[in-house]
Length: 203
Image (cartoon, rainbow, N blue to C red; front, side):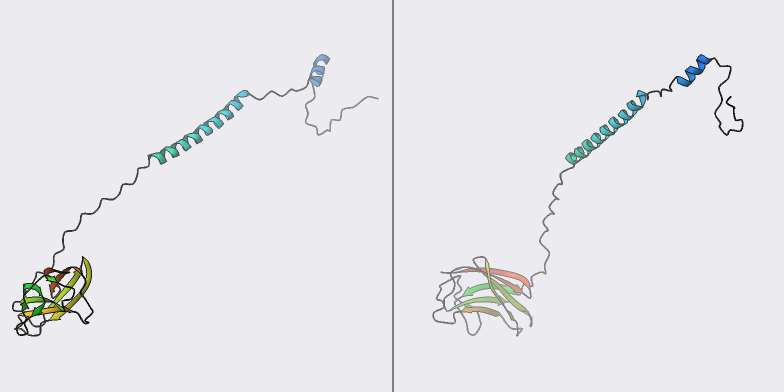
């Protein structure tokens, strides 16, 4: 029984030429199709890209490190110039003299035997201000320091235009009390404006 070729087949394969020699048919049917090996060029390109990426990464790290090392050191800001003494109100010139004493005149208020040296047991230490035409309401103030340390302060207003002397007094209230030993500095102000200063000592 002969095999027949079905002409209604849906196969799209091309039939071999029937005139092809048999030995060629055997070669066609029996020779396996060996795929070609991949080209080495592809691997060389991939390797090159990886190498470039590594070099680029190392370069970036090096650049960052160099930048940190080259950052400038912050310089301290220049110290501002010391401001000159601020202007203040002009002294009124009402105080003509400042003295210390152990006693004052009960009639004129002037210092009796002015001195700058006192004993711890002296009952009174007077600070006497001699004035020139003070206006009523003018206020005189003192700030006292002992051995360069603030001690106390006080003030007195002028109540009469004819006042020639005005005084402050530091008195011992008790018989057992004494003045502190040391060097005293007294600064005197007229209505808040510095006028004069004086020193005295207690031994």
